[in-house]
Length: 139
Image (cartoon, rainbow, N blue to C red):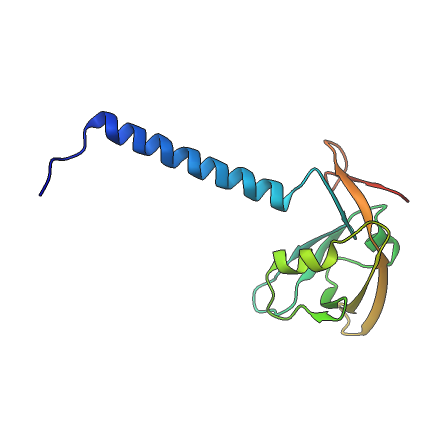
């Protein structure tokens, strides 16, 4: 076999790898927590053993909250597209869109009832205060 890499070469390799990991983490942070986005103002979760995302939080003052969406409500479809077995990020993309446009959601409440809810997207900006970390614009 060949010679083992030098200590200096290994340090350069490790530093390069660390930069790649840091870049990936920063990209993920920008994609999952952007400074500004247009959406309905919810935080989602996918509880174990379920096929549809559930609302963990509807941001106070946001359009989802105003439409009566509550923690525990499952989003069965968004814009006519089923959310069954979709990733959280795929569902987030269905919920986001141009400001002032509407998205129709099929919602299953905690009591099992199913209803359609129309929610108008608003612009949210990142903030250091507030329960969600975002403020809604365009109320």
